[in-house]
Length: 290
Ligand SMILES: Cc1cc2nc3c(=O)[nH]c(=O)nc-3n(C[C@H](O)[C@H](O)[C@H](O)COP(=O)(O)OP(=O)(O)OC[C@H]3O[C@@H](n4cnc5c(N)ncnc54)[C@H](O)[C@@H]3O)c2cc1C
Image (cartoon, rainbow, N blue to C red; front, side, top):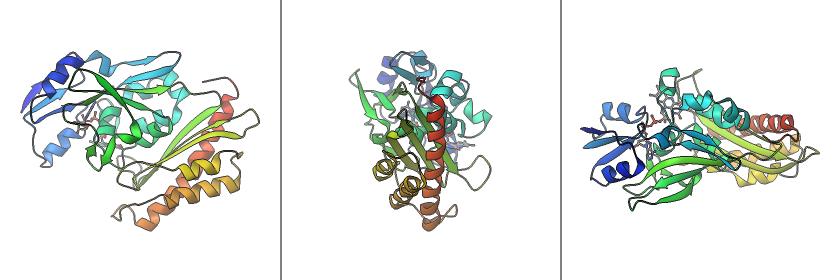
């Protein structure tokens, strides 16, 4: 297997035009998969030597996170964590400290595991993937449109994610991500739930987003749960309706980590709890944007 370490997006795109060539960022999925018997590509292209792919930038309008940035650098970014605590907590759940020093949001997204922890948290924050195309340009896809099924994405051969961009959070907006795993750490989510809410000055929800992981082949955005929260003050009835909608949106597998009935139930419980946390965070921001 050949190893390439390009220093520009253009160079990486050129290398990726060769057949049977694959990009990697942290390789915390790629190497275990090859060791477990997946076919080796002829060449691996390391994205971490490209400055644009490992930088985190904030402007007045948005954050731009290099797709190969180690997640440890996101959990260590106090401004990002204050603005998007749920997203940063989700990134911080990936593996151990050692894994965190390598793992990336781009890798978590493009590995396309239904249980990828950062993906529901990215979806509720409206994160967009900026994708380098073989022709030398870029195109942008909403994160929820990147996974196509377990282990498959909607990227075409020769494409790779350069950046993940997210608009600055509006005032009185809070997000949260919760997952259930059978152990206390280092395990795959049985269910993951991301929620983001925006409140008006009276505490009424004006915008809500709900997304679930590990309950279907790809991340599930639950618009019925969002509708149940919008217009409410996150009272019991609204939370119960959102939980029921989340459970109804599940189409999970049955495996040793959880039965269909268990995953379906837990999706509702976590949605409710994440909505409460997101609401508290939004209220704490009380008018001071971000
Ligand atoms: C011990 C251990 C514990 C783990 N725990 C968790 C966990 O709790 N939660 C969780 O979600 N995951 C977990 N993982 C899985 C893994 O760490 C994450 O999915 C991680 O985010 C992958 O990032 P990476 O940069 O290492 O990806 P890589 O292994 O480099 O790449 C993964 C896949 O994405 C593709 N890819 C990478 N970057 C790009 C890009 N920019 N554009 C296009 N394709 C790209 C690669 O070709 C490959 O197919 C764990 C892994 C290990 C080894």
